[in-house]
Length: 201
Image (cartoon, rainbow, N blue to C red; front, side):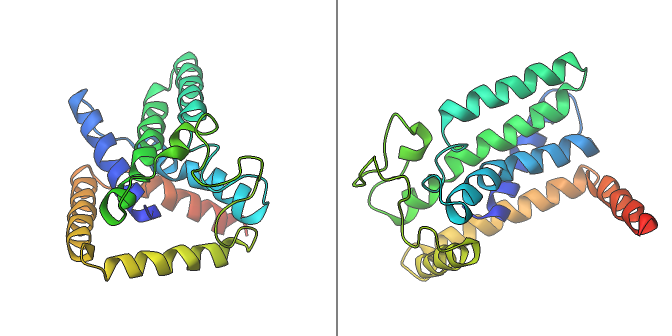
């Protein structure tokens, strides 16, 4: 999934969770949820696409890393009396992982989920001793992004593309509508950060 798709799904899930617990998403929690939805890619893509030390999407996309990490974040947050942003981060992070399986369920003959169980389950058809795998490995961030975006556009032009776009638009619009209903949490904090930076420059 692309960043905006992860963000929309993660926010929908976090907002629903907050409301189920009698809360409304706060500024900090909404930003933490947003960070959580992007966190696996912020870690794994530089490790693979820029630094060439691991296959793409294996370290923080693995449940063997994600679950303990989220657990530690929750424990620390409870100790300091700020559990809600940690819950939001955890929901956003854990929503990301199955989200990356969805495109293969829609567009490919077999779902790709091996990365969720890495290193217990290696990438299929790849020599597990090879630390760098995948098309264009080592080519850099922009080359990789262009490669995957080209594949994404090609998939959208295929027979299942129209349905995928329709569902994606519904999810995106639903997330924006819910975020507006929640009072646009996160905007005030980001605006304050921008103002403070302008004042210091």
